[in-house]
Amino acid sequence: MKIKIGNKIKEIALINKEGNNVEVSVDGKVYYLDIVMAENGLCSIITKNGRSYNAELKPENNGQKYTVSVAFNAFPVEILNTYQYLTKKTKASEKQDRIFSPMPGKVVRIMVNEGDEVKAGTPVIVIEAMKMQSEYKVNDDCKIRKILVKEGDSIAGNQVLLELCEMPEV
Image 1 (tube, rainbow, N blue to C red):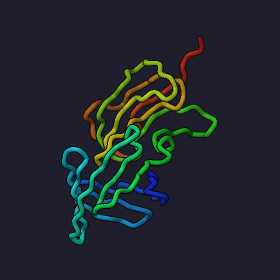
Image 2 (tube, one colour):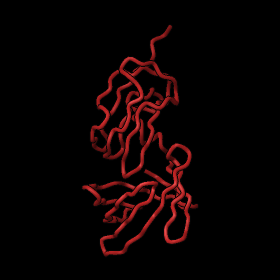
Image 3 (cartoon, rainbow, N blue to C red):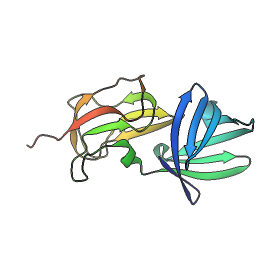
Image 4 (cartoon, one colour):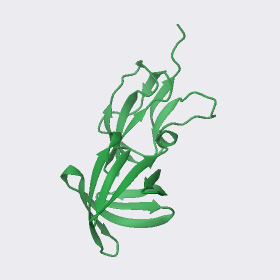
């Protein structure tokens, strides 16, 4: 996923996560971190070489924007291009036919049922990955064809969560 930190855009990818141990790539450079989340957005981060950082994450705008404070400095952070990571289309001209997770995580909440007709922009599922919750929305008016996960499920990267179909013509 791409994030904007201040005026810089970075490509971030979760490579592996076991307990508090996280392996992430930032613009192709791999970092091994031990991250412990406390309450209220506070976390402790220890790098592989033993450096320790305390950080505070303050969410804004439904979890797409944050203020991250580290070592007496505050940085505006924004998750970019959300929809290109949350939906798959075979061709740009085709309608969205599924919602998937771009990275491993956990299903926090499912806000629809199979057979529901939903309008474009409707939130349908919430996934937690890397200690952040993301609300996934549909791009077009559609019908929920099939729900492939349930709340509490652990999911893999690129796993399809919901299958969608076009709404019937009236």
